[in-house]
Length: 127
Image (cartoon, rainbow, N blue to C red; front, side):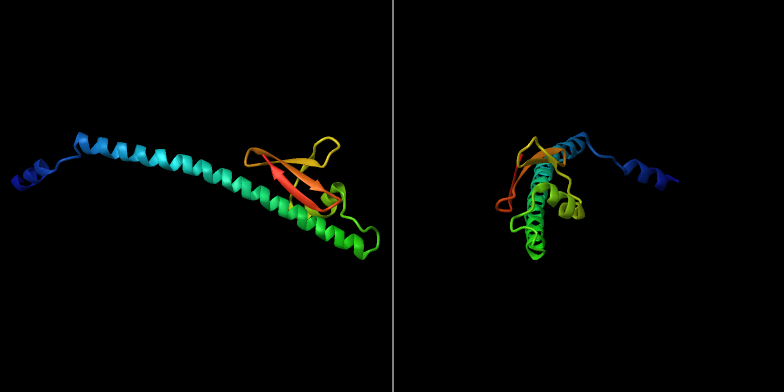
């Protein structure tokens, strides 16, 4: 019994300094990690936008090849045809902005503006 009391008496907890040091270290880690996480989300959304542009250009090329092969046209398809025939299969939804070659889409809470030129089949994006 005496031995048990001495073992219990010798056990000690963390000191206040040790606890404060752990809190400070966690704060430093959080201060570094949170901005890095936000940057990663932005980079991921930008990469998705670039992927959509690639899908638009690929779809335009496929549409051009289809139209030329079937002798119905020798130009790139307009965006309406492109959207109805090729982009839907890739689960991409873009909304037209007025009567222009501009289209917008929401990625990760950020609105991106996409361009598509049916004369050349080129596409691009901006935030």
